[in-house]
Length: 350
Length: 277
Ligand SMILES: Nc1ncnc2c1ncn2[C@@H]1O[C@H](COP(=O)(O)OP(=O)(O)OP(=O)(O)O)[C@@H](O)[C@H]1O
Ligand SMILES: [Mg+2]
Image (cartoon, rainbow over all chains, first blue to last red; front, side):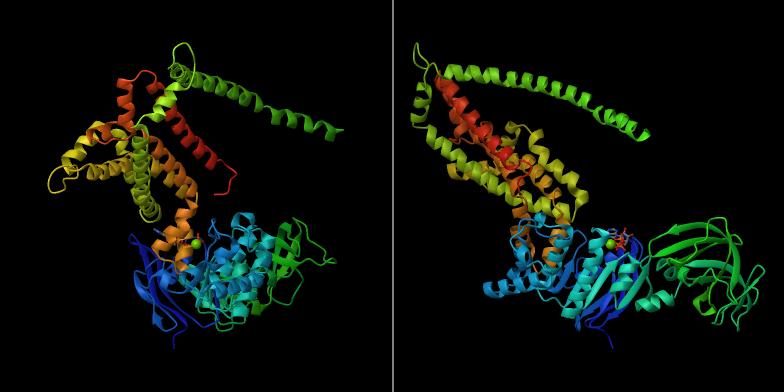
């Protein structure tokens, strides 16, 4: 059973250099999927192949049951939103939104109805006659979204649409994009290198690295059960401690003098050197019954709602994120402290 | 106490760069005035001479005679038509070429740029002989009649305009995000003709106008090629006038100069910063 949009065995080379390799993905109708990964990992290239701006070196792309691998970009009926907005500077907001409808030779009155419908959708009904250079970045990107949606596309593609905007506007527009996507129930692919954006927006996230898919899953799954070391360290902060395996079946490990425990089995023999991973927010500075390590506080950073404490433990650095509670007594650099983490919140990787 | 002393060094720092700027402006003025004098004295002298057609008094007699000359308006009109035709031909060749090079073949840019510069390198005399030798023989025989020669002349003028046209269009294309605009239009369903007509051309308006006016200024008084192709255009008319009349050529020169400067002034006005493109 293949999805509404299905990418199968997609590969793209530029002059022999591989940009995307063995990319397989099925997207369900109405689903919001993000491509997340560091710069140069092939997110844009994959998106451009879906849009029809690049042709894959190998593989097939199917959209709504049709093979569109080599279809022309202007025959795919796919809406696209660019990082740089790409509004036509010679046209007003209304003309920009109507562009695709004019190209489709849609009738004048139907066209203007659709334009005002979209202006309402993006909450800019009074900007119809403005030119793009008279709008703020956030407003321009809303217009670009409306323009892409005006043609009732089968698929909406967004390539880092928020990265040119200020933090505050970025958050507002992020929520706006999700609201509109839900309202129209339009199948969407969203490219970003911002993990928070991907986790907050998506039904599913595709984490990519060096042209390959590392993991596909729901945000919760990606964050809590990262499939690879790359995903674990790219999505969210992660602590990594060198440990040796004591009893693989019981999840027992050792770090120096300290006995530690995880709740899952370990796929490595006794005595093997592995890494123990845990999220900073799982670590507490309270005393606990097990998984306790002693260390020295190195830095304390105030980040608003959380306080980030870096602790040196037997030559390794451990980051602990504590909630900023008014009654919390903050440690200071140089203090000796104990850190602990629950056995269910840590896992072992090679 | 310490707070009040702090701003003083900061403010002198901020003023420091102004002195060299002022000196630069002084030299800029000196050079500007010298250049202006260099151009204005001959022009003024020409104008002065053109006013002396009647004995013992200054007046516009030479201009009146010039405008009443039976050949003035026909040759002028012919040149204007040639110029407009050359501009359109040049636009039709240069805009799609520059667009395609920017979009798809950026590595070929230097090559294309060099080709468009050839009219600067090849003297007009060489160019016209080449054209006549190539197109004047069978099977083309473009020089056989006056009208077919005129077509060839317009093509030659279009080629002469390439350096200016390409530069203007190229600048215009660099000022916009050609690739994203093109892809945005494509994803909305537009094909190449629509993209060129509704997105690229309108956003190049200013660049196209300046290229067009420069072309106009060159073509309107062009002599060499027109002469060798036996065309009765404005250039040969002016040259002929110089040989047969005393005061009219000066009046002519002033008129031609005014035309060119009107073209230049229009460019400056259109491309003035702060205006919507
Ligand atoms: N037109 C091209 N020609 C040659 N190489 C290209 C081309 N486009 C992309 N690449 C290469 O393909 C790889 C993937 O690029 P891509 O733009 O898809 O990355 P990305 O994940 O979108 O990165 P970013 O977050 O920086 O936008 C990069 O190594 C890039 O250099
Ligand atoms: Mg990208």
